[in-house]
Amino acid sequence: MIGAVSTPSRWSQGGARDGRRYAERFEELAAAGSDVHGEAALCASQVPPGSRVLDAGCGTGRVAIRLAELGYDCVGVDSDASMLAEARRASTGVTWLLRDLAAIGDIEEFGGRFDLVVAAGNVIPLLAPGSEPVVVAGLAGCLRQGGLLVSGFGLDAAHLPLGEAPFGLSSYDDWCDAAGLLLENRYATWAADPYADGPYAVTLHRRTHVPSVGL
Image 1 (spheres, helix red, strand yellow):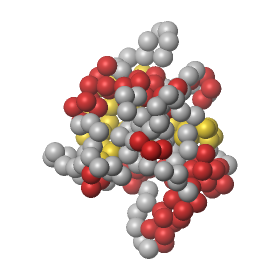
Image 2 (cartoon, one colour):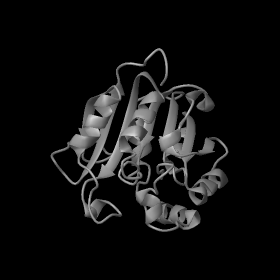
Image 3 (cartoon, helix red, strand yellow):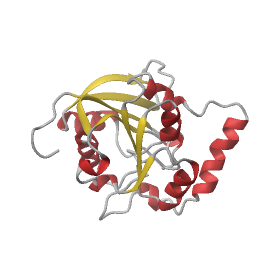
């Protein structure tokens, strides 16, 4: 998970994370028969194999690795070195970068723009307080015209590792709108179940305009 440069992220404020243990948790779920690839499946339903995908706040790389296995050209970015070490151990088929989402910088570092950016695993609520609009704008800037930003996060304490949700969907939609992203779909789950004001939301925003200069 990624936080702002000057202010600790909500993720980092929760204490140090052990990347190996985090990865093992999903390995155990998979071994027990759970589907741990819902995020990747939804992303794959939106863009064809061969598309460029940025996994923003990639953690141990579960989503990007699965998409790479399905034939996507993936880059994973995270600021947690322990998580990223696991991602690098698990796959050499993805480009892994230790970066802060609030300071992405020149997209040419990533080889150009992406067809899809995914921010799964409560990435947006776990950003540093106040950095959310900057991060959303930066992720929008990584997209080609017509590209998709796909995010999934909880909206209450039961679906977040926090005492309460730091913002609501209206705020998130406002940040996306300011970044040139148009709301296209919203689901209650990564399985694309219809959304009806529930405690978790998966949202798809499409980039409608890419400026000729800057981002």
